[in-house]
Amino acid sequence: MRYVAYPAGFALASLLFATGCGDDISSPSLPGPLPPQVGQVEKQQFLLEDGFALRATNLRLDFVNPKFSNIEVRTGEQGSGRAAAANISSVVRPFGSGPLAWEVGQAIIQIDAFAPNDASLVAAVNLGGETAGITLQSVESGQDSIRVGSLFVSPTASPLLQFRVDRILSNAGDTEATLEGTVTLQAPTLDGVLNTTTGESSSASVAILDTGRFSATFGSIPVSQLPSIGGGITVGNCLITTDPADPDPGQGYTINITVPPPFTGSTEVSGAVSGTDGFTADVSGTIDAATGIASLTPTIPGGGDSVRDTITVSEPAQCVGTVEITF
Image 1 (spheres, rainbow, N blue to C red):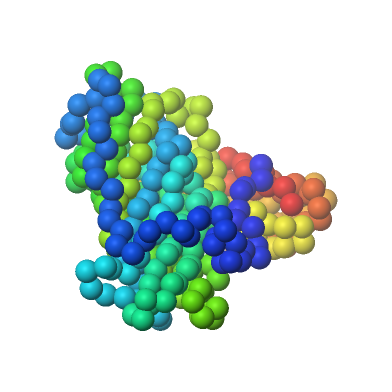
Image 2: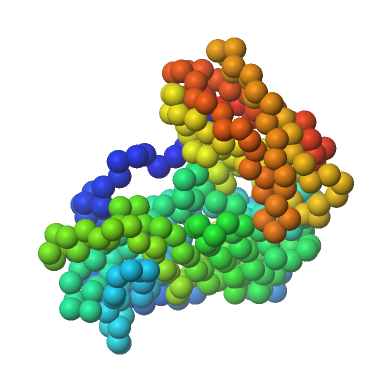
């Protein structure tokens, strides 16, 4: 399998054409609540049927008043601009015996902001960072329901993404659900920040999007029919990713494994890598108790064009399985 990754060489200038900067963004506001679909009613919680997950392709993220770590932006009633992305793939599923996982597919969030002198600022962040997406985990221990107030948080600091569910709509048979709530995101910009008024581009910066809303309508689907979209592949009860997510021919990579809580038995992870070019290596690592992530060593050297590497996890028991990547 070959992961989907954002292409290298991305240029901010391409966003100026692709996103239509002629829209009025001088005083943006967040969208209001979605109207209920036919047969939907508001509920305090949504119960996932055993063996099922929720899947959506229309997740939308909207932010107002974006900020940057090293660049001043406009303050006051007009605010500093907006950021948005739409039609993002998304899945809410059980994650082993631990809390629910919310997988968010890769997306580019366009940021249109203003400097204090009203100069136009343009930037973008890659939702998922170096991977093909990002997986959030519920802070609640239950794995069969989403509640009003449920909080989902990314296990890594970059990007730092958080969803809080404020509203749930579902039909009588609980075969679909609309979820809405607040979202916050901190992530490095792809190519710094471009001042379109002066043509100057800043150095790398972190975008701080702390005022936002999300919305999506999900349909119920058997977990057995659902591959992972959150930047890796689910093997057993664990998530296997590589960094980079889609290694080019000749490009080395590291293997990361996310293990769902609670941790039982050994915290050691071990396995092996074998390539169709004859390469073999043993890999191992230790689970970080704070994040549930184990980064395996050594780094695997890149194979030639079309070479396939098979990653086999042999320990712990809940992660046993294989993953294949192609250069």
